[in-house]
Image (tube, rainbow, N blue to C red; front, side, top):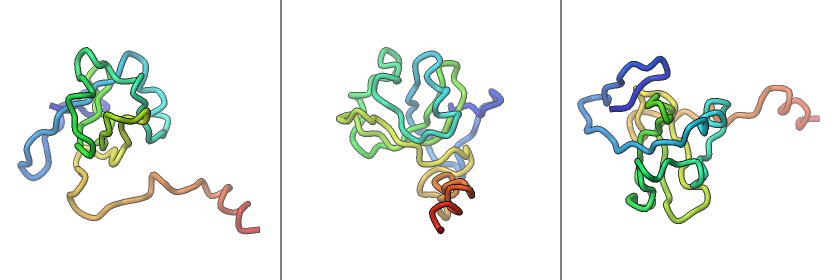
Length: 116
């Protein structure tokens, strides 16, 4: 079962089945926690979660090496960018409810500079 950032177990919303987990190597969660959306193939712990076992487009629960939930991601095992974060909210699985693109917006200062 996926785990929340505080280490608590997260139940799948609305009685949906659990998603397979994609586990990262030790200390490879720093970029993801910092806001990055891509997971490179060399960051995945392939001994515990073989990336080749997934099909392109599969949705997984992304977890740290300690089992903490990091988000939901779409997988492509045939690419250097092996997964992309779709949602960081454990209660909002991809495909459930309206999509929020707030994690993709530019900081306010960047937007102001571009509008000049």
